[in-house]
Amino acid sequence: MNILLTGGAGYIGSHAALSLIDNGHSVTVIDNLITGNKKLIPPQAKYYECDIADREQVEKILKQNKFDIVMHFAGLTRVDESVKYPEKYQIHNFEKSKTFFKNCFQNNVKKIIFSSTAGVYGDSNSEYVKETDDLKPINPYAESKCKIEKFLIENSKNEKIQYIILRYFNVAGADANKRSGLISKSSTNLIKAVCEAAIKKRNKIIINGNDYKTKDGTAIRDFIHVSDIADIHTTAANTLFKNSVSDIYNCGYGQGYSVKQVITEMENIINDKLKVEIGPRREKDISVSIANSDKFKKKFNWKPKFNNLNYILKTALEWEKIN
Ligand SMILES: NC(=O)c1ccc[n+]([C@@H]2O[C@H](COP(=O)([O-])OP(=O)(O)OC[C@H]3O[C@@H](n4cnc5c(N)ncnc54)[C@H](O)[C@@H]3O)[C@@H](O)[C@H]2O)c1
Image (cartoon, rainbow, N blue to C red; front, side, top):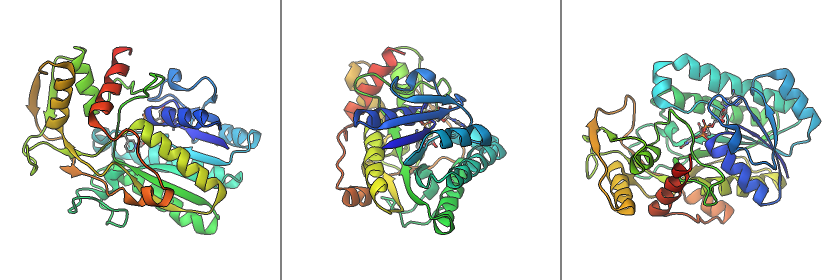
């Protein structure tokens, strides 16, 4: 397949690019490097430094290359920033994605895989959220993702496009061969913070709230290894290439770990104690987020390879050591 990735210089997009290339596909990346890093783009990929909403340049790229599928990763990803600057997320995520997709449709690229988030469910009452659960986003980041989902679903009728919407839970870890990992300097990612503390790049970890209604009071998340997320994209693309299969899928392991459990697991790996401080809850953060991930597994006969917190932390730590 010949695949266009927006945001391929970012954390997840670069791992998807690696998975596609490892499986023999052609990859083109467009990225404006707003949060991404050129060194994460696999050398075998074709790269254009370009904003997704640059109509002219994107049209040129679409016309020059006959893409079978577009994977749309590009966007801003920080919940805290979106609460502070909601308009920025409306424009940068929703409006720009709309411009980009319209450009794709007009240039006959009609198979789309889109990076959505578990955040679309909000603070769900069910223990394991299902794709059919109500969407109740509680922050502008998740709202922007809901709007893009809706746009794709509505346009799948009149534009005859096919989509696969993937709602990721908490993506973590790094490529086992150390070809990519999380680089962002302003990341609010717990596992990155824990890795930085483990190698003394930061002196303490702040736990954002220990008064949630969970067993140990800290928030619970479903962490999925980034290479499994990448493999999910390759698997989804293989099917989308051959069939009309528009649908929405959760991407998680269906297993939750608390912030404290993650910290303890890292302490076991490094055989040392980490300095921890309790801070306030993050605004508009949710307490528990665990996927019911049966739908993707059944539909695509897919099995995760790295469903192991220890492995997730070790790969993230090895990457952190060299960055
Ligand atoms: N990391 C997670 O746990 C997680 C969870 C759920 C959903 N997601 C979604 O997955 C996608 C990728 O996330 P990530 O963690 O890899 O983030 P990231 O910041 O590492 O990657 C995003 C990439 O998109 C690029 N980009 C942003 N706006 C652009 C634009 N207008 N034009 C061109 N390039 C642009 C950035 O430079 C960056 O390389 C995002 O859409 C995010 O919302 C991530």
